[in-house]
Image 1 (cartoon, rainbow, N blue to C red):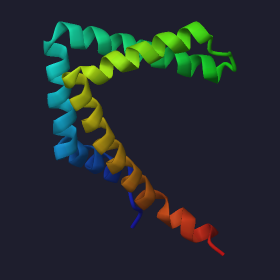
Image 2 (image 1 turned 45 degrees about the horizontal axis):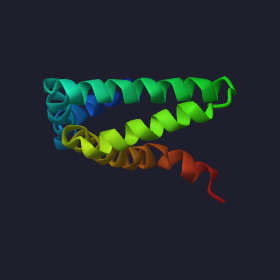
Image 3 (image 1 turned 90 degrees about the vertical axis):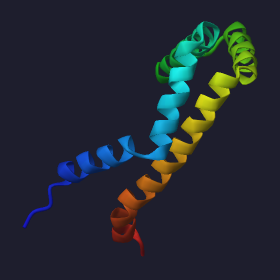
Image 4 (image 1 turned 30 degrees about the vertical axis):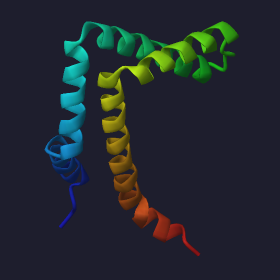
Length: 114
């Protein structure tokens, strides 16, 4: 009997959606959205991050002025308790993803282990 990996992936998705980590992110993001200043800071920071990622993928150099702006945004974000809560929740979820990834790649690691 063939294993349907996509079916298992959908079950994992459901499990993630029902996890405490996911709920913490959702609740924290709702708080960010509820506070206009937090939402503005968050959106600006995400926009800067995406811009930097795009520049790096295209092999472009990030300007000193842009780096300074990003540092200022990061400092402002650190002071915002709503965003700080969201970032902490994201960090917890990232840890879960790392653990899941280790489990998923274990069979391949075993194949290539000498």
